[in-house]
Image (cartoon, rainbow, N blue to C red; front, side):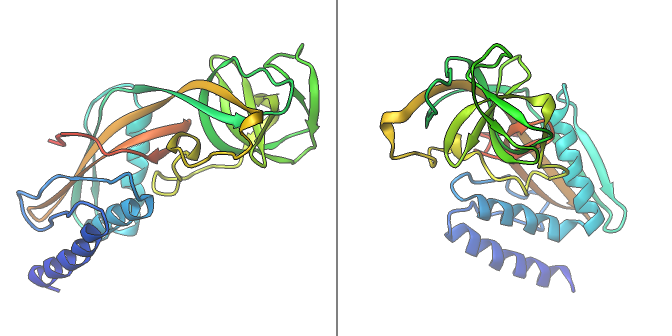
Length: 263
């Protein structure tokens, strides 16, 4: 397929995405317009990035590119990360900006007796208990026992207590207490940024109608602006996004970066 046909097909697909709320991306030009991933529709955001990778990367190249995104997000510096797809001869560059600490306050229904005054790091990650676990009223072994989790029982770790090895347990929309993280195992492993859903707790979409039993939860979460560039045969496409963290190596696409420059 020659490049003119490829460009025409790309423009048609991306025009459809643009009419649905995603910004139009331009391919096939050394002066390609920098694109941003839109926050208002996660599925469309993923579609846009997938389409970019389809144009430039092989299957192995996609995996390497997405893995390097995670390496960049977990890094402590702002150096450029570079890579090459040996199958398509595409080069890429990835750059991340410093961590941004976001404050958040949310309301959730809570079992009576649970202390909600602790400063939290919001997560929203599925976990499974390794053994029978006591649900504590506060993040301490001295906390009152409010119930228990059986071995293998699944729960949502809605947050981790800041600076402490304790997880705040949510089941069926209700905060039930704290468990020690050493006795639980994350169900989410080896997931790239396109596979992780945004945190509904922080998006304002998870709200209980039982306002009388709701308590305020205070905490923070980490985000980073990331920009990238894909180059093949003199043709360039670029993009920028904001990624937010649930836990180590688990990041999701959030708001687009503003005025980012991938060069």
